[in-house]
Image (tube, rainbow, N blue to C red; front, side, top):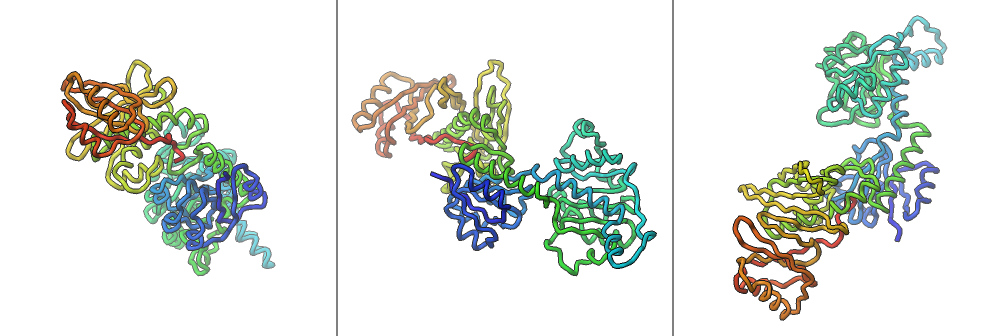
Amino acid sequence: MNHKVLVSDALSDAGLAALRAAPGLDVEYAPGLKEDELAARIGPFEALVIRSGSKVTAKVLEKADSLRVIGRAGIGVDNVDVKAASKRGIVVMNTPTGNAVTTAEHALALLFSLARKVPQATASTKAGKWEKSKFSGRELSGKTLGVLGLGTIGRIVADRAKGLKMNVIGYDPVLSVERAQSLGVELVGKGELFARADAITAHTPLTKETTGLVDDAAIAKMKKGVLLVNCARGGVYDEAALLRGLESGKIGGVALDVFVKEPIAPDHPLLGRDDVIVTPHLGASTEEAQERVVLEIIDQVAAFLEGGTITNAVNVPSLSREAASRLGPYLTLARKLGEFIAQVEGIHPAQIELECTGEPAELGARPILHSAVAGMLARFLDGPINDVSAPAVAADRGITLREVVGTRKTGASVLVVRARSEDGRAMAAEGALDPDGGPRLLRWGDYEVNAELAGHAIVLFNDDKPGVIGAVGTLLGQRGINVAQVHMGHSRVTKNAVSVWTVDAPPSAEVLAELEKAPNVTRAVRVELSVAPATTSS
């Protein structure tokens, strides 16, 4: 059965042809859908491929009953409500490098245009004038370029600028000094960058921290005549502050490809100035980039739908096909440990912690933690929850999540899921994979047990006295419940015993009540463990 894919933005002929030729996909092409139209059509589709035009709002996502993945052909996901998508377990992917070279080249083109006043000179000459002295420019060689944000695009700009013999300094709060040095960039603070740069170019996402990054206070620190370029996101530069800086003469020129509101209003005050160059969000607009990002997102969406491979996701860790295959059994184990704790202990968690040792620690604890959270919270919530939605659901309920890398010297690959409640109660379940890759419970609380985590189970708590197993087995047989396996466990602390009974059918409440009346049995709990393996592509 083919996967249904909706394309709601215009694609090139080559890109659309490639999408339709991808095996296993049933593609519907409907560019230009408004919010209400998209909401009305999205229901049966597993994948949505978009560019910047479609607005994937919470209203749209409420109707996305079958949607598993949103593929954005491009880097920005401002037009997607990522939080709402995460809560519904929908993976949001982009193509962060597909238009990197194109955008970097456009930023440098705007910088050259500012330095040499190319657009103004072109307009003057076409108007029949010859104003050679009016458009005297300045060289970039030997000048200092400040790069705000040293991600993929910022690094390309820095590399090209070094080729122009510019001195490059950069600001990036999550880049190490050593990594910046390997790029040939001097890493500095924001204030120092503003003070030293002859020209500044922005290559940051639009976040709470970067909104208004260049404002009146920043401009006050800059050199007189500084040149400013923004090909990143509208809002990184405060447009009103730019106007004031130009009017005062502090700023020598501004080149903008992005704006707070797009399209920019015809009466915007920046448009009336000769020292301002503007382009209509052309950073990614080359034929090569347009086709490249479409082909990349097609490959990513198809790989996800067919095999669960997650690449360039903005709301879940990316996994290669090989890593997903190796990680899959641990995701299943983590989810079932979470399910087990939630049902046996009934603990309402305020904190959920995962400890990984061995191979799962090497593969990455975060997706495993999310799977454990999904398993635990599924027992307290009415709506569906999976590995993608789990962290958002936990955050919404004030539950803190924590990863711990184990330090066992045995080299064993072990997971420990811990839950702590607001009142201080704590419970932990430890598990590992059996030789066939199946999930097994090794310990929970003080009880040591080696039990399969699968299907229907009954967990019994009893005094450690003879006759319990026989009495319970007889009772279950009389009620027509077939026992597949029984696993015993003992507490070194309380000297009590537990047993995990894997059965072919779930026991009724009446059967559980009868079991609790059996000699020396203190408690009987029904446990239902998910059959389908947990994956990061749920």
